[in-house]
Image (cartoon, rainbow, N blue to C red; front, side, top):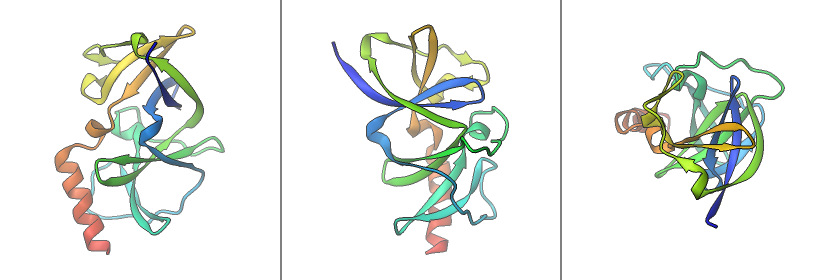
Length: 154
């Protein structure tokens, strides 16, 4: 059976997953520098291991309301194409093997989340897991905006 490892995390009460190969690291609190003229979901930038990294509020990006910082809040540092991005999530919960046969196409809308942001959905142990498409989370025009901001900061 074909299975892939995914990092599971929470936004509000919903469980999401991204493929473990896209994760650079999982961090606790990070200091941010606010940047003007950026999308609402962009919180700012931080330097991580010598790399300027844009930080996004994933809840805001998915229309789930802004993040509420707690002791459980984590930053998933991911690689999207050639850009390192930090995504603030409510809680990183576990690494889980998800068999390919468990993954189904995403419905057009799951709550407030558009299907374009999802690779699919899986149900494991009676829990619905939404698999994020990171390339769609940061779309082409937004990548260009973020890159311009990063270039200005260099």
